[in-house]
Image 1: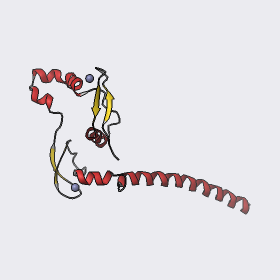
Image 2: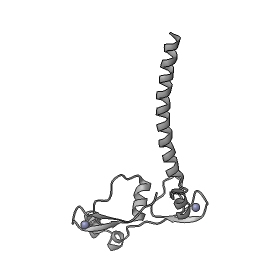
Image 3: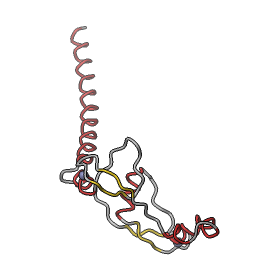
Image 4: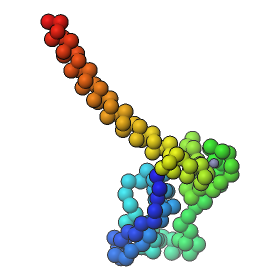
Length: 140
Ligand SMILES: [Zn+2]
Ligand SMILES: [Zn+2]
C-alpha cells in the first residue's frame, strides 16, 4: 500500500489542503474510513476555543505526537506519530514500508490471496454441488 499526498477541500472555508501520505498512513493505521473534512486551521479553530482560554498556543500548534517505542519486527528504537495501542505490533518505518510495499507487501498479498481463495472456494462449492447432484441422479 503506497500513500501519496492528496489535495482535499475544506468543508468549512472551502480552501484546499494537503492530506499528506503520513496522515493517510495514520488514518489507515487507525482504520478511519473517512478523509479529514477540514484544513488544519479550521480544525484547530473548532477545537481551539477551549485551548485559547486554556493551555496556550503550544498545544494548538502541536498536531503531531511522536511516541518513542520499539519496533515489533526488528527491535530497533523508533518513533511513531501516534500512541501505540497496548498489544498491537508497532513497526519502524523500514519494517512498515517493507511490509506494505506492493512487491513484497504481505498485507497486499494476503488480501489478494484471500480474495482469490474466496472466489475459488465459491466456484469449488458450486462445482461440488453439481457433482453431488449428478451423483445422486446416477444413483437413483
Ligand atoms: Zn478550512
Ligand atoms: Zn523494524
